[in-house]
Image (cartoon, rainbow, N blue to C red):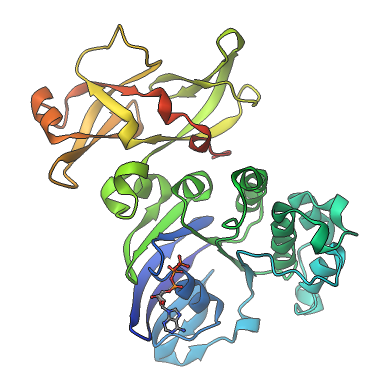
Amino acid sequence: MSIEVDIRHKQGSFALDARFRSEERLTALFGSSGSGKTTLVNLIGGLIHPTKGRIVANGRTLVDTDQGILIPPHRRRVGYVFQEGRLFPHLNVRQNLLFGRWFTPRRERIASFEAVVGLLGIEHLLTRRPSTLSGGEKQRVAIGRALLADPQLLLMDEPLASLDDARKAEIYPYIERLRDEGGIPIILVSHSVAEIARLATAVVVLSDGRVTASGRAGDVLRHTSLLPQTGPTEAGALLDTRVLRHEDEYGLTVLEVRAGPLSVPRLDLPIGAPLRVRLRARDIILSLNPPETISALNVLRGTVSSIDEPDASSVDVTVDCAGDIIVARVTRKSVEGLGLTPGSEVHAIIKSVAFDQQTFGGTC
Ligand SMILES: Nc1ncnc2c1ncn2[C@@H]1O[C@H](COP(=O)(O)OP(=O)(O)OP(=O)(O)O)[C@@H](O)[C@H]1O
């Protein structure tokens, strides 16, 4: 699975000059409004043609202006899911799903109708009209329709933006299954760091038409300076954890990370379930001594591995906790006061506020 983009494009006064390569299952395009995310998605899908450049998906060249290659959109084998499902109102769900197939030559039809319907949990909706579906159900049908066209790449342009948090939570597990079992690379446009932290395996950050950071999700989200739009408030580490036990008497679930247990509000998950947790840099305090008389439940021991200075007053301290890398955003004054340098032994105190509903992602 791979996608390679090296493209320049001008539209009006906006110039896109983007280069990235991803071999991950789900690559999130992140950036503020007007940074060029939709333009990039439309260039990959072939809805607009670049001034210059190259796009290669799974080894297949879709665009190469130097070589005069420009595969038309209907031959790119790219599935699209938009913010609003754009289902046909006069067709029921089954007919909407099958519509996706009509444009795929019979011999190239691989996705099984039953498998796609099962993956998205929409068996019970097949005879319903779109007007009777919830927003989340509509989006699942829209994803199914795109999958049934047997795409080799799936483009999702803010597919959840019009849904409320409850509907989003309903649909995340299906996107996770698609990511993990679907076998096709996905490009997802999102404004939400929480959503990206949950779903993405790679992140490309766009700013004013340029790629300012790209890489594995954990690496990009950890660095507050790589997320200029939300950096200080949203950046943080992603940890792959497992449910170790439940402490029902306290309403807690204990998660296992390399550096020790993490207690979080009770989760309705079985013992052993994998879970991705986001620890925001702003929610971590550092101490040289083991804190004893504080209310925070979670303290991880680690070694400072690097210290970055994203701005005049704040410092990002990266701490290696037995192989799990976390980052704390603290004041420059605190770093000087504690005498922190790479190699310092510290205790990272994780404020309980770090574990809100949005902190939790699905399986890693
Ligand atoms: N057809 C067009 N002609 C001229 N300028 C355009 C055209 N389409 C988009 N733009 C401009 O290109 C820039 C990038 O737009 P784009 O829609 O790609 O941004 P985005 O990151 O997807 O934003 P949002 O998050 O708000 O959807 C914007 O400044 C926009 O005004």
